[in-house]
Image (cartoon, rainbow, N blue to C red; front, side, top):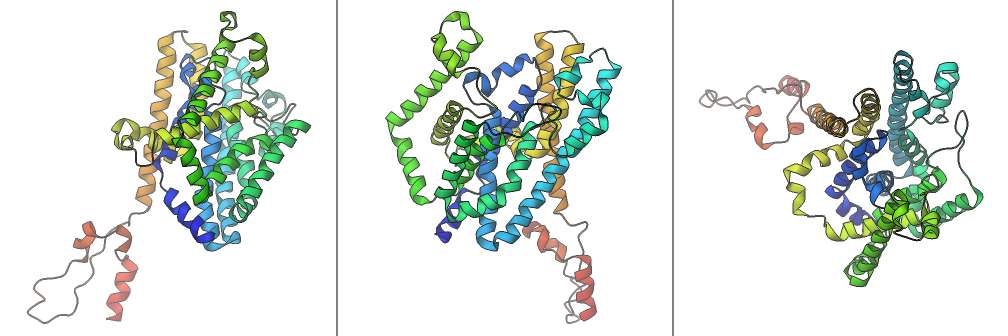
Length: 424
């Protein structure tokens, strides 16, 4: 079982579809996080039950299973758990930095400007009267400032992921069944985590873990399961059913925005709307799975569109999703501030949205470039020539001349070259 799973994970590694979808999710999250932004009407959540958050969580589980699943199979539980907790610490550190700066910035702007309503809009009401208490609860993930709920959810999911992955690698179907059972139990008994100063988490981790686990389960699926999925994708009747459900979700969503149009019966509309995002409503999960099913069929792994220049910014943002997400949190606040203090024009909404996406893309390219610089040697050394007959010493051998045809990591460091000379 393990060799076949390792081969499947190796085959799924480097799938550019994941980077493309993460980039789209990061852009949509930014647009959705700018309150009253007219451009956000074009994002995923306005055309069905699911939205960018669903996509973010599902792809997060899929990519985490690929990365750490191979490590679990090759190096064992202990090493993998330490690597996951290292990533968890990075996520938590990013959250703390964002939380402290974010709420301080919101509080300062609200006090200095004529927009005190910002404090209530961004869920940081206690920061003015109870600053220290709010900060402490924020460190414990009990505060819920607007736009940081996705990062909070990821921190909780990654904290339990070592144990989940251990079960997924050995008994994937049993572990997935346990996730489904936890989801229905949380819905039935109303389980959730409390938040400060009152209320509960906007994204219930007991329910949202289902999408994360579905992504991990599909990433770790064996050959037989993937063959069954591909067989379903080839059946026209299954694809037609998925399309019909997407059209149904679109009709219900539009009916919620224009109830007077009478697109769908009021009873049906009221049963499905408002869409329960907190507890991840079952029809929301089904909508996302239908989208994923059709996307995987229509966009193969070797799709030629990945070479299009117009898609490279989206793919790069997906590759550097954490930095892009953090930048988007601040940009969403800045964009909202511009919109409430400036003229309420459609052109201003478009300008704020385009400027934010361009800045996020610039951050992604900078982070990607910076990482490449870290893997380059500080300087290239020219080793001393090998001892040779007198007739040959007139043509010295320059090792650095091989650099274009050799990886940078294969070139000797300065210390290594000095040690070689001393030995000689």
